[in-house]
Image (cartoon, rainbow, N blue to C red; front, side, top):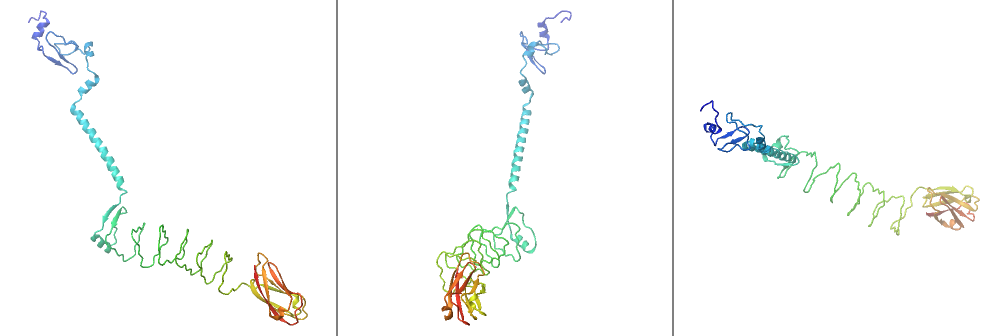
Length: 345
């Protein structure tokens, strides 16, 4: 080959190191030249330098899309590694949330623990604490406590409670039915209705502030009341004793000079004794004044005692505060007689 002469392209191709099927690669393009065919759309190839002209308009128009070129740069193993990392992080988050919820739920669960015989012997000989407030102590056998038993919190008994001796409770609240064979209480307050099927005995008296209804017989050694209201008949099988303080008495002009009068009994009933002096006249023998005023003018019944009072023409004057025993004809000198009285309001 003469360097002074211009060689044709065909000769250059023959003597070139690149064959007709040689493929040239760079970091951006792959160009394949075949005999008698140009590098269509890939730009002019410089056979001497082995580089391509990136600034060619034809080559720029044939470049693949951006995402395709980006996908070609990623390695499939790198994608698998990233996928494994994402799965591991997701599993870790799920396990953390599940563990946290299990821990929160376990705080409200009370653990149960059985008490062995060795633990019972340890309790009998020493002062120890068994378990915590979140645990339950189950004792299947019968238990006997020789000393005092203190329960700091609530006591719930599923079965029957039997107390051999006295039961002292500062306060007791019973929501259901209760039955007591012998109940002794220093003070008992009942907010609702109370039914006593047996005999009710009150050793220190019975005080009732409201109305009371007794369907059966009421037996009492003594009944003291300010007002007794009977809607039915009053039946008395014994005597009527009208007690109370003795009323006052004033002498009248019908007693005469040196005459006297006295009263015994109460506002309800009593007796008046009259001693006639000298020179008696017509008028009133005595005036009885009640210790308690009647609401209305009462009915006064007077009966003479002895023939001396019966021979007189006597009469009475009455009001809500007093009554008087009087006569229309003078009584004999020095005579003694009396009158019984009953006052009904």
